[in-house]
Image (cartoon, rainbow, N blue to C red; front, side, top):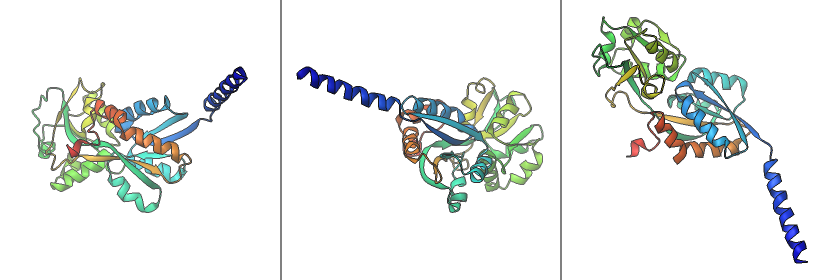
Amino acid sequence: MRYFVRLVLFLSVFSMGSARAEAPRVDMLIYCGITMIRPMTEIARAFEQREAVKITLAQGGSEDLYQSLKRSRVGDLYLPGEPTYRSKYLGEGLLGEVATVGYNQLALVVKKGNPRQVKSDPKELLRSDLTVIIGNAESGSVGKETRDVLEAVGLYQKVLDAALYLAPDSRVLSNAMRKGEADVILNWRATAFFPDNVAVVDVVDLNSRLAKPQALLLNMLTFSRNKDMAHRFMAFTAGAEGQAIFRKWGFLDNQALSR
């Protein structure tokens, strides 16, 4: 009888383990702004090791991503590069619960060693001896933040007229620096610390009262078919392990402004 009970318990445990192993995999789609794609890819792979989920990351400019998810009504989460994309579109009913997962901050980015001696002043973008490239405010978060910062000091139209061209996103801005197309750009600060950029660029920080840290808001999409898994991913990203990954890639974590 004792042997029979042990056998029944063993079979029950085995059955439960098999059921877990055979649980259907969830497929999730996350719309992620270009600047955050590296930490978010690392976080997604770590999360996949813990859950029965496969995560696909759609990357692009924050505005372009929103318009894509709006048209398709497919996906689970949206992470734009700055918070006004939430306030701007919240009334459309597609953005639901939210978690702060870090902060972006705009900075001047120059060639390694700052050979042109660019100062911590947005007026430097008007120097006639500098080639300047900035982001396009109509396609990505870095362009939107550039416009906001420069409009605050009355320089946006002048810098727009002086710029060599407008880049659609932070990646194209970084590529321009690596190719030697620009002497200075306005870009998200964290990009200067990415492995492919750190050897060729330096950061010239702007006054934080002007270039304020911008919250990175991970938005649940109201049409998500995987809300429970998406909730768990949001908690993981905003938690200790996810925040350590954001810091590793040069971002301010979600506790930075409370310290």
